[in-house]
Image 1 (tube, rainbow, N blue to C red):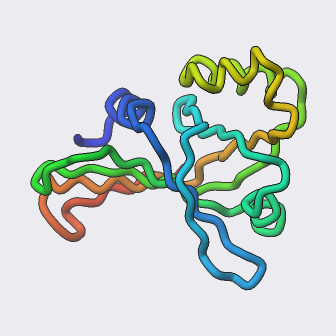
Image 2 (image 1 turned 30 degrees about the horizontal axis):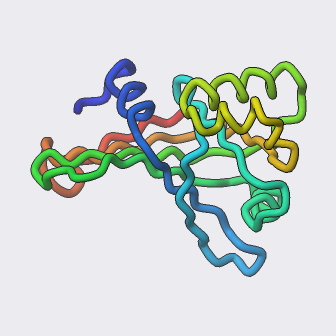
Length: 151
């Protein structure tokens, strides 16, 4: 998967789960798997409970990383992508509507929760990318396997 816009966008959108990395108040890296996310080009959106630790961690330090990786890959053609950027809580009504639609289009379960009015205790974030790192073992190992896009 050489980096080109179309193949990267497809890879991100075909990922089933992402891994979000934040930093605790004690500066300890914290990771968790998210299923409620959507990608619009390189901008990632996600939903979470308002009272979760990740919300407080993002408010303390908005710099985050997200890992996109497909399951059951063979080592010789293994690919993943990491987006590093700034997470911002979404509060503007028009952007909230957009994000809820993106998440609903991606996940029938999320759409069902929206229709039932079950997202009142959720908050939504946008991650604006600053760097994208693609690891592609089909190109070799070490530095040969890595492509970085700084935004």
